[in-house]
Image 1: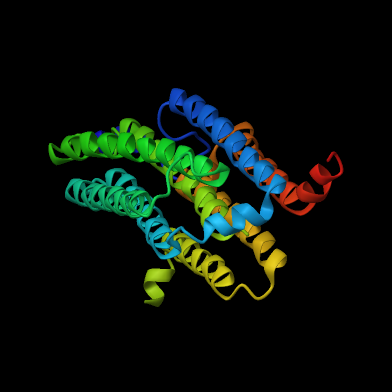
Image 2: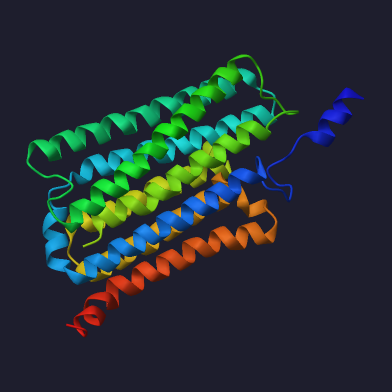
Length: 198
Length: 95
């Protein structure tokens, strides 16, 4: 009977459903709209001074941007593994996957801090020009989301260590996971726009 | 290795990393200029779509959710492409 009731309540990835709390999807939608306008505004301003934006872009460290992309994509993937482990009642694996995701989130912050330090020490600040105004504003706002998301992951990691998430309780984990994937999704657009497109 | 790739989520991760590498190398060589930038934006859309469908699990969400979030990625990418290609000429016409 227990097995049966567990089966009836355990969501599977292939069911027609929305993962996590519905409210987080409203938040994600609002965030995507806001950032979407930022992205379009950036390319719009770029169209006004293409040569200048291209020249300023060369001051950025593409390799560090690439490294951070790999950190976030892999971190997101670890969170996917955590949700899957919870559905399959593997509590140790939930905590371990979240732990790796957190370390990758922190790695992202460290690299970003290195980038800012390097840029500022070479005399490039927010008021240098329009390109760097966008660069600093967009990446700092995004970085705040990375910090917030890492805090959420840490809370979930602590919960996972007490065995909170299992096949009968995945909603909270899915809610936090969806937010973290959004942070990844935003960087997937930010990285090419700021570092690559010219 | 092959057993690892039989898992669709592992494939998604590998695709995301591969697509990132392609976009990065396109910029690195910088031989085909405008085309490379346009391809980079299309790659961003494809990567975003993979995250939306496979990581956010909207592949199996009610159609409305899927339409809204996939629609966002298509709309943003289209606007970016349009402004990238036509923006400079369009804005210059007002000067």
